[in-house]
Image (tube, rainbow, N blue to C red):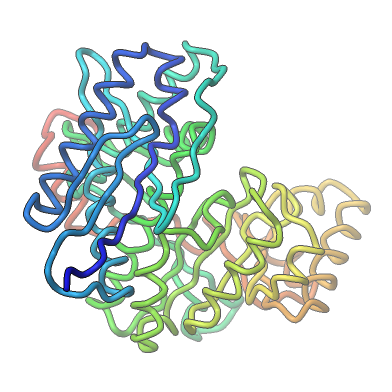
Length: 377
């Protein structure tokens, strides 16, 4: 008896926007490149890959029976490879926003209104970031979260992504993060960041590391399936991972974000809410999500120095977060006076230049200097 085929779909979420900002012809080239990359990765003998108006349909035609966890991971890996490298079309380099659905595709609106010049400018920044990721040139500048006046081990080291371009220039998140969020391309990027931090945790069994993801990535979607699966199987790694949600962009769905936090914590990893009080974060979300760590934005230290209203506000935030049951970290400590005022609030953990500036590993700095002897560092 012939086994029934299994079908899946890979949607190019930003295809309408690409057509609006560039042309229908460029969009067609992007669609063809997606088909070609998936066909090459999956293999024509096992999968039938066909173009659709919204992306690519996949039909399994192998003889063996599909096992749900393994096939999902297999398709995730194929889509990750396809999405990672920007598509070069003439002078343009375009990043595809791919999502997979194990059933019927969720088709985007066939038309889109974009401001073409801004979209193209953002896409240049996105292509720069994804190009560095594809070349394996992602590194982390680490900064510890520490207790005041003690020699205890840091709570953890925050890993701040630093991409390195072909000419050895260090690309900081401010160059590309806003563009990725505006284009809706940050989820796949954040997945790469988290996977790289997990790789570091495998290599360094004695450290606890944290990394940032955008609020837009706090969704239990396709991009996190294998990551959650691996963390669940490796409690020795999960217990040393902190995922910081940075709400520079609004959460797409608060209820889904709460569920995402729950899914992360179920693996044994911890969740931090970064820049609390400065972005889109709210006490209600922090309470409902039951995040492990809340990091109060450093601007409140500046306000505390400015006058009595600032002093009251910082005390209030520390007490509020403490009542939520979360560990409190005050960011932006740049001087002994900053630390003194922050300690007065009752907080136990701090982060900032006063303790240590974010530092790239020595082997990365050495490589940059050797590769670019004429560049000032």
